Length: 141
Image (cartoon, rainbow, N blue to C red; front, side, top):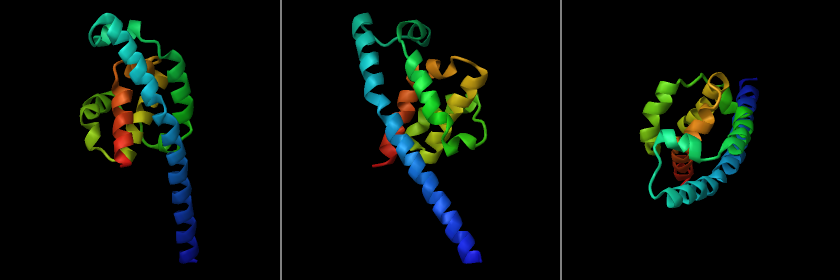
């Protein structure tokens, strides 16, 4: 019976990892789209925008909706709520984090967005999501 339980747990874990892998491929497709928009606006303006200016110049509303839909259904979404403060502190060291921690950051931003509408779009515009996605991409190498 214990072997059957372990087998069931093992297949569940494998299923979760497979689902996260598919979600990873989906969200990583946003990297070139974000980079293109940042480059387009920054080439017009002449330099990187301040967070305040980014909120008005970049248009990521539709992308934020799409990312919210992709991320809200992941198993990682069930983890504890990641507070804004933790997100802000952690993003600067995201290159050092493992993929599960990066997923927690991504889903944490979505969770905060449920309470603080517009937070996800703000985090796209200030390049936080791009930093996390790049770190996630690097974690698979």
